[in-house]
Length: 430
Figure (cartoon, helix red, strand yellow):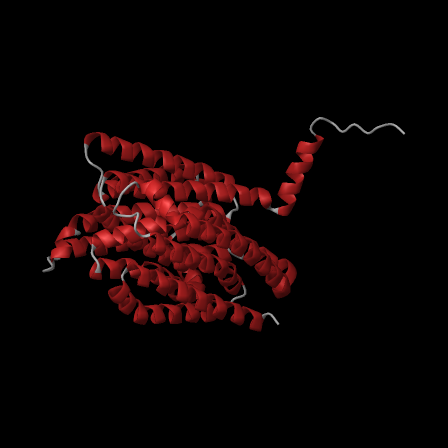
């Protein structure tokens, strides 16, 4: 029998077919993209912690918390409903996309105008005076951040993951150029960091919109119909997302009030190390949303249940391994990355935050499955109850035990939330 000799490109073609068939190729691109996004966020905190002080890190963290909360609100009432409905029958996709773009521009403009009013209000507070410059730069930062995030979510809805990666890589290069240019002429602080990032993201969105303009048709009637369609599901997604975002950043604000901006900076430094897991966590979650929609259409609720448990297994295995590594090497990691005595004594806070993040990430596939299964209202109720519980116990814990109390509050709430979401989904999928 003659020996079979495969063509030279046989193995490479087989590997590409395997990756494309299993969906792993898209996941790899998404993980790489999230590494770029998380790397940019970490770079700013790293530069501030290294070359400024914990106070500037704290002010920057509080400002970014406001931006991310607004991003979450925009995602829940505009971009996530767009993702769910953009492929529905009877919808003009270009007009629907143009409506979503117009709503995002309007939303970001209104949010920026609110902060402009806040800036001109003279409140009798010493801490408000200290943060006046940060409030002023948010007027520029909010539209830049929100529209850049819209562009990412829009391309993700098309599963154009390679494009998302390339645009985010370009955005990181813009940010690096801006920050290093600023550092040449001035000492980097929270205000200048936000200014550089805002200019970078705003410029990137304008360039992106020029190249991707073929997807959008602007029409005033379409804006109204898009608003009605998005609000039908967004009104339930918004409370859920806002409760989740407020839970995530409540301790930033409490630490700023009770412990001061330096302690807030230390807490943000610990979170930035935990956020090194974001390329995996957010990459998985970004891929789960469109894939869950496909699975439930093709295989029903039972198929979605199987997919959810597979995703939970992958997420939990990776994240609890990550938490164990942080537990063992937490102090050394803080000292190596930040090289600053303001942060190295918070290894215990970092450990607790690592396990809290593991539970939160493992709960992500359940939350995504609930939304896909049209259980947004029930999922929203769980998130609201979690936030209200944290709102009651967090001030006591932060005031009494400091940052370690803040970390344990998050851990307990995430464990309760994961159990409640899982119980709800199992009940509806039986």
